[in-house]
Image 1 (cartoon, one colour):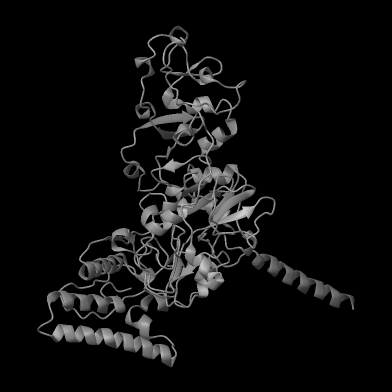
Image 2 (spheres, helix red, strand yellow; image 1 turned 45 degrees about the horizontal axis):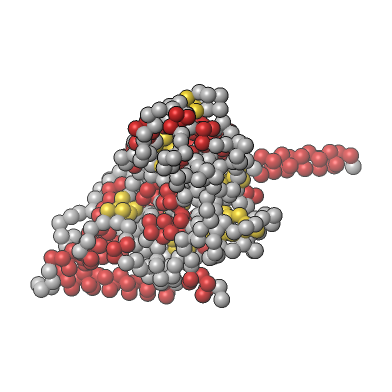
Length: 359
Length: 209
């Protein structure tokens, strides 16, 4: 791709210019979309404006897109032309405009990723007067994340669920939770029909065992296949992520997931200001909108800097093990090589990177 | 008639051959399974740029080597309130024992195996209270108390060395810092009490009505 080809039209109300550089896929390593070795050239060059408008769409969606864009455009024009509007509202209009017409995160270069993250941080600052820290850190080379869950250790305390909700800024009203802990009767095997994932009594209960499910970050993820707008994909380190700003909320991925790993925002997620986790990642725990998909990201904001996901850190029993599958000396590799491990619905060929094992 | 059959066999054979060739690949990538991918891609593993050291915080650690495993565990002695024991235990235990003095350690209730198997001196060294003692009478440092546990609990010990038992702190990247036995289990009462879950989803109850 040409290095100075702009991906979206910029109003330039203030002086900062979005600059497109280097490869359009945004990956430092070769290959876009990680699992797709020969990305469609056509698709890669389409970005920003083109991705929004240069697609076949129904009249209704076309009107919707146009109306939304016009509203933002009109707002931008009126604030920029107005003499009374302050610098801050001009900047806000500029940010809104650029955010509306930005491209798919998957196709962005590193600079573009940084630019959108900076815009989101600035926008939050303008709206609330508070700062937050948002990262756009890419997948590291030689890393493939994997997870192991010891079903003989889990006691059903649900500390992981609590930690996950707090870490990932999940909506407090709808009580959406990425992790489910299933209480299962001994001797019945993995019988999800008879399992209870919302118990409230002293645990561990007599004659029961506990096992957790969440997004398994499949290596061959069916949810990614079905997404009509490519708003979800598998990163190079194996994380299956969602671009919340590109998601149209069709919920195909939710239907395609055989593990019930995905969640939908039926209402605008709200978190009390003092409880918001300000350490965020674009693909992780930043604040979502109403009507988009979200799910466990193995806490991308934590795992990419070397920390364990919040659920692993919170578990008091040590039932959760997380690590790099490509490191031959990692603990996760020892578990896979020395314990009797299994995965759910292995016959589907989805290759989940989430193993269960027993003592 | 015969040569028609022969041709049919050849065609069928060819079709079968093509099916075998194409059936195993699902088009998801160059590897047949995740295990193949892990095996192939970890052959030339070079390490990562991040480190756990930034996330360990101010936990004092010691490095241990057990078999092929080398990792960090939290330092223990500085965490024990009444260490060093010899501050009180100036004489060997049998010389200090008497019936008229007020008992120390009255709050410790040993609930670990039965009376035939264990009492205080199974682990505590009566001659030098600053150290622990193995079944065969060897000295074990308080910092390496896992050596004491591993005498009986050999299977959890194997799992712990590999990383399947116990809890890792800091992060997933090297250097590995794992909690040692006594960081989770009280050696005097090693079992866990049952308790209530920390969360109950009231919304889910409504949705499922």
